Length: 242
Image (cartoon, rainbow, N blue to C red; front, top):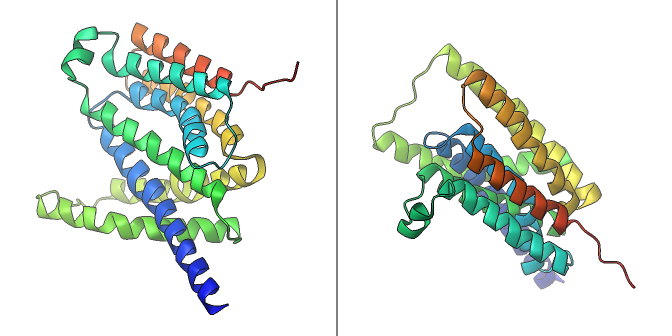
């Protein structure tokens, strides 16, 4: 019995490590860092690929069943991602001269896919608020060495009122609030179905980017969006028996 308890505790610790590392550490830091190099519209459009990324991870980890439509949707969504990061320019693909921010976003959406899949796979039961606190705590532990690395590279934190307001906003809404709602959604309707609602992120982000930052929605954005959304709808198509 004691041996089983230790195995369970080890597995629990490993799951919490993965949840904290992939979400708060990798997804958050890579997303924020990507915005230093790429358009807000680019970064937001990558979020439409998260649902099919979740489907892929769930398939690989055998968490939820996957059908031929979901795999086909995954392939089409990947083509949509390629359309965005290459700007429909074959030379960029051949030379592998991709925008650094776009590559950061690819890592971020893969990390969120892993996070969502493990969130569904977890075999422990705690309240949503407690789970969010635990995940954030583990994530901050991983982020602390990165913070020290920035300081050593001569990137000090400038204390100001703006920094205070930004931290308050991030702590309440994108962090605790969004993680609480997401964990609840995955627990209730599953990772695959919850992922569909992430497609609303690019809609609101694109509108705000065009209003506040005068960014332009270009043709390659349109083609990439169409392919990703087509893949999204295809991946959620159910197989019916003849």
